[in-house]
Image (cartoon, rainbow, N blue to C red; front, side, top):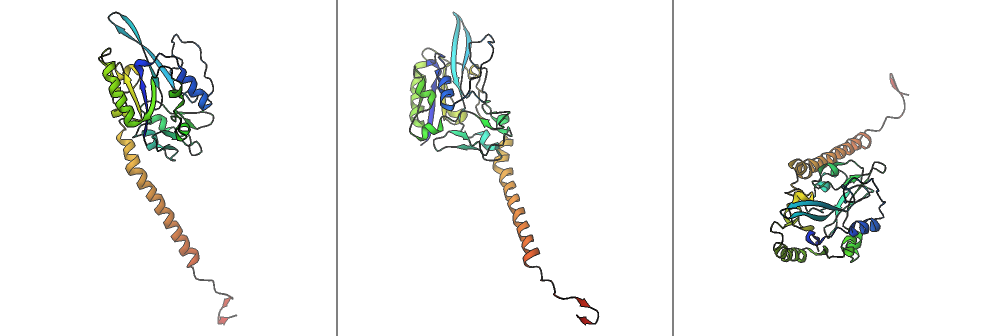
Length: 265
């Protein structure tokens, strides 16, 4: 059954427990950098950082309000990263998690270039892509993602997609009493594997307003050029095998003995 990670930013207090849990579970090294004037731990995703908590200030009539929001891979149901991967290294689990098979990954970076959320990163040393896989190994064993398990305020929930969507709709009605601009993000924009309740415009959280919107070039590659290319390669191999068979198997055997003028010696 399809699963969903439901993130209610109105409950997030930026404790960053999800960041720590993600690093612990995935055995990711610390990425310590000089203080740049922001309380936000990391500016963006990295090969050793799959989860970040965005921290932004919003000006209101009575002052400044902090808004927080956890960011990770959206696990899009129409995933551009998976479409452009030439080695089928990016795959989808039955529950909906998008993960990378590093044995197949060649580090081409096409996924990096085409992800609208800026999630995948390629390591310069290993030449392998890495990103949040929604703790696919935990899900397969009946556990919840590490970030959801750790969140102390219940801002991150995990469950069946239909249940999470209903919970988001109920919660949205409550949140709008305080934040009239609140909205559900992710269901229409990325397919619903990751759902948000946002109290402000998606751009404030660093999210594209229209979600994935896979470019036509990517769809052309996935649904036309790539299948035709595979057929062409297969046909070329078949023709090569047929030519080899005619050349070696059907070639007449050489005559024995030497032919000399006037007869056979």
